[in-house]
Length: 269
Image 1 (tube, helix red, strand yellow):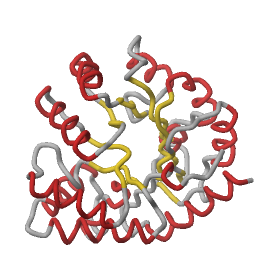
Image 2: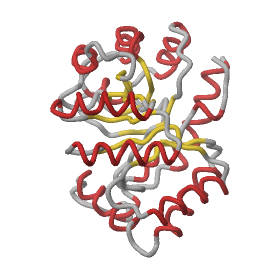
Image 3: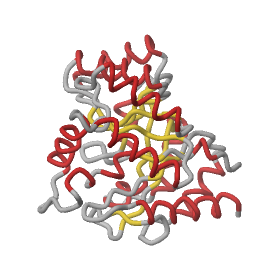
């Protein structure tokens, strides 16, 4: 598998704890999301967004997976969207995917697709209520943006993902989160084989123990990441591989740098 730095996005949700200074106890993803939205809807947007992109670019990344809390489809102003595009251009970063909570109504879903298109995203990654699947499929066709369903709770098995995709595999596909498969004691490599005909995107993640979801640097946990890379090579996967590590109580950037370096080594071996 050729090492192309544009194929390895940084997921900006890796900074989920940042707006709360990594001190939200007990940690609650929804509250952290809300705190991030409040910060990035404030007068400090340009400063905060620029700081994030500086960190990401300095870590060696060329593309990002933009979290909805950092540029929200329903709340971001046109001025903020244009500022975000200018900042990304300044740091020579592109947006591959728009991900997170993508809407609970047809209006919100439409807003997600509109923002994704404006930012140049090729994929929406996350999940949807089943009542919005028909609408999402029409929007995929209209915007020419694919939707990758991630194996989060309630969609935790390859079978459930394939059921969600159904006969819409031209625009609907799978986003494999290797960490969530391990949480449910599902072998990520076997899941990739099962989903290979529907595989749109990868969230490469390691966790410390099965049954939990405490993330760590790639190679430091229980997920056999080298085996995942070999499996992706075996099926001739040529899509992007996002690096995901979302610690609740510390800044992940040094561990993400370590993860990126290890990923390059595994790809080149």
